[in-house]
Length: 252
Image (cartoon, rainbow, N blue to C red; front, top):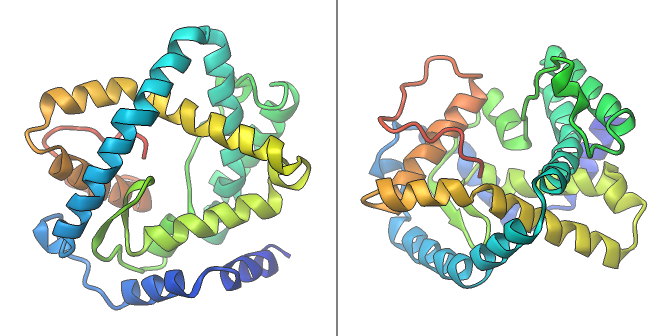
């Protein structure tokens, strides 16, 4: 049943995304260098566009949200969306045959959705159940598909030829399974999705300060940290050379 759903979701992907996925399988997987970024001029232009959108819209809204929202409520909002994210982790862990992570994510989803009041409280972490993050890009990487060239997506930011189409597969998975999409009306879903964007950006405000202070070239800094983080996630942290400034904990 799960494989049937995934097959349906993949067939719904736009043909352009399928082309990107095909090109990824034919690309070389090299070390983290400019060779990974043959589209750098275009990527820098998109990066600049994203920076403007962030400076004008997202960051001010996130700062306002953080200013008016009490910390306990902000934590509960983040917990709610993290709990929904367990769905993709369950699916992709299963596809990667990482059944220990499947059980862990399933346990977290059940516990936090019930005892944690629809995920508003992270009871599972307090019980010692470790959280994992798995997505379809990691699943493709697990089966040997290289990341391909680095890619900066408008609005969404750092990605790659493998991770970009995979991102939309994950979105489709969520639409097919998540109660937010299956049970709520369109207007209600829009409110929740907008809240998710604002909450995510608010959680990155501190990271933004660090980047603005530490990075001589913010574009290169983000590119290198993204590529290294993805490699670490795919290999579960095995045999990955550490970047000189550890920004792997920054979420993208």
